[in-house]
Image (cartoon, rainbow, N blue to C red; front, side):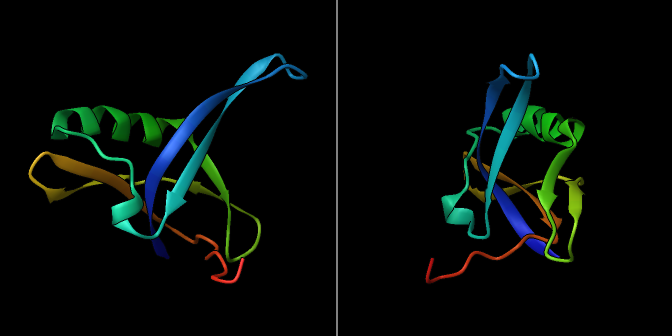
Length: 94
């Protein structure tokens, strides 16, 4: 299991299905993470992430639902959110 920091997300309208989907991005480095100015605002989004049932391709094969999002304080007024999951590590040569 690897630590994946949330770097961003967007809500995308899928016209063919007539619904919306959420695309989430993760990075293994905290310095690349999206950040929140207060623990309270990070807590709101942490709860949102846990409820979204974010699905990733697993390094173990198949799919994995990300759960157990956690807030980490990097510095005063700088909070990030991460989860532990079988992320596929990006190739450095890509």
